[in-house]
Image 1 (cartoon, one colour):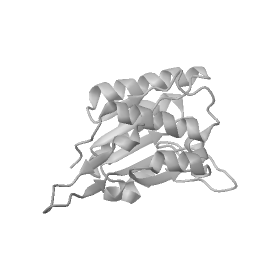
Image 2 (cartoon, one colour; image 1 turned 30 degrees about the vertical axis):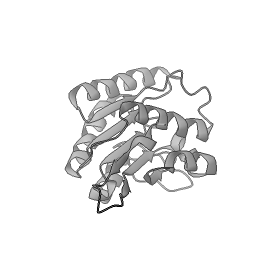
Image 3 (cartoon, one colour; image 1 turned 60 degrees about the horizontal axis):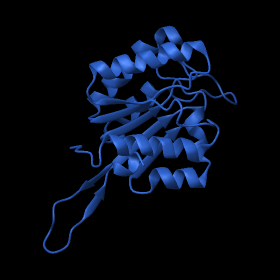
Length: 188
């Protein structure tokens, strides 16, 4: 389970040990938004971490988000800028289905710059289910960014989530990848 591994152990104090849960911010669009409304998915994702679930339908990375019910949710960049250090050391990104293919690579770089300025140490970015051709190019943008940024790991969930509309499967897939990346994060 991916995000469950985002635990950091505080030093032993006297005879008792304390465990400090790592803070993880999940920023998502409509795909991840299903997690917020699903008790099982929320429980899976937040079991052993201090979870901050920042999801909204129609969210984009850095171009104005599309409107839903007359309201445009903040973009990932706007949200990350406003949260600053409250993002914590670990961020999972599940945003891109509403983005523009020709601007996605630049938008990823902008987001990573804001994360770095906020003190984020580790970023997991989910690829897009390649149901439409632009998503193939956008997935390549995510991979290219990871090659330039050691703090970025790609969660390529192609073949791992048979049904994108099952929030519990989405949450579990995120957990599996993050947990597989490290058994314990060294986020300072």
